[in-house]
Length: 345
Image (tube, rainbow, N blue to C red):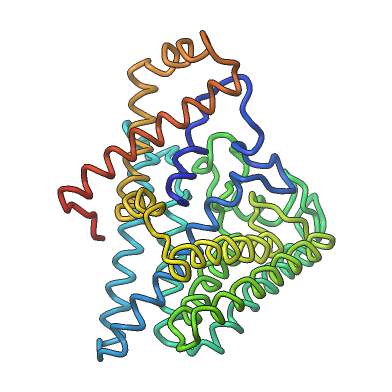
């Protein structure tokens, strides 16, 4: 479901009007689009527990699992660079951070924490990530801004990105990056929230009790995130601690709804298209980026947009353009699924 949503919100088509849920919040606040990335990291954490715990219990060597995870994280990071540079690869201006880069880093760090700490310690590390980031953003003075500034062009995240990533940041912002250096700390907490949920799923509790705990904990996290927003605004661009907690709660509630439908009620057919999408998640994401870039290079975006605008209002045309991408990429994912071809990193 997250991958399908990602394909939709990443391909608005540059229309003069776009439905607001399909755009990121300009700064503070959140939209539907702002739920997608943390949902992906969160469900990666859930999958990590389900996968690694079985291997550890079967006697797999933890150091070898860690080495595999570090290699996997590095490859995902490399795919992000490959996508950012396509097709010219100008190393003087290539964007170094990115969505895949953050996924790779958080996956590698999450694997290290999972393999060598207990669930209790993991919960403490999650809390520490959130509190340390809050303290850094609130108390570390920034030249020209002072301490505690969370303005778009005047905050610690922007300052650190400018020191180490100058010329290699997101082209739409240039002076800071939404997947920047310091905000990786709370992003690690996002994957840890998923890891902790994985323990609940693997527990011996009856399905109804698991469901109850998921709904209770999810709503508790939503409340904490909204309460924290008063002191530290919910903000995806700098991945604030309040945003991390709020989105973890949101992901847990949505997952609980899916769990209720598929695992408790046994209604599973509705999820088959999403299962197909998710079976090649990284491959679909990379292909989506390449296809979007190739459409632009071939000069096809303008005629497609004009064709859609000939019978639909701009916001409707933007939605249709995004749905075309969702459909095209689903057909590619379906073909890979039918062939049994899965990208294993």
